[in-house]
Image 1 (tube, rainbow, N blue to C red):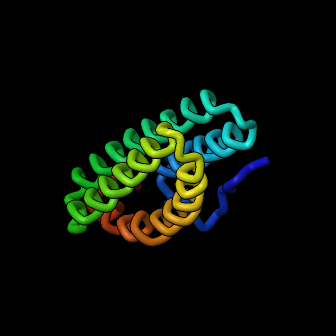
Image 2 (image 1 turned 60 degrees about the vertical axis):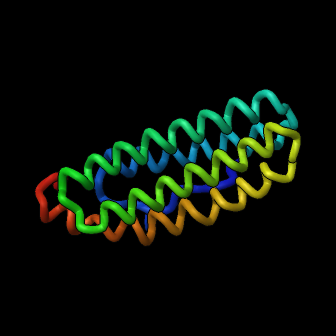
Amino acid sequence: MSFVLWTADLATGFADIDEQHQILLSRINGFYDAMQSGNFVDSKIALQDLIDYTAEHFAYEEKMLEEANYHMLEPHKKVHANFVAKMEGLQSRYENGEIEAAQELLDILEGWLFRHIRLNDHGYVESVKQAGVRA
């Protein structure tokens, strides 16, 4: 069963970004499924996979915003960096035996990602289109 689902209001209209966001949701669901199975090793692997892909997506998105000379690039990058640091902090706690850190992480992932896409990411769509970086 899925923990998070893709909904049409998450679409930015950029096929590559939307595909990456859908992969992020899939990775979140993979971590959730591993947690539900109770397999600590699988959940650690799924969490690392999620963090790695999140960082990869953020780097890709930031490059696009840089190419578009997006005026809010630095604050956007800061939001990304803070989120990855938060995830890594919770990962460390979880791997050190604080099982409740995994639930904290799931709660944060569920709320943060959707808010970020709907507010921050949708906020750059017009600027990127006007810059001619994406159609």
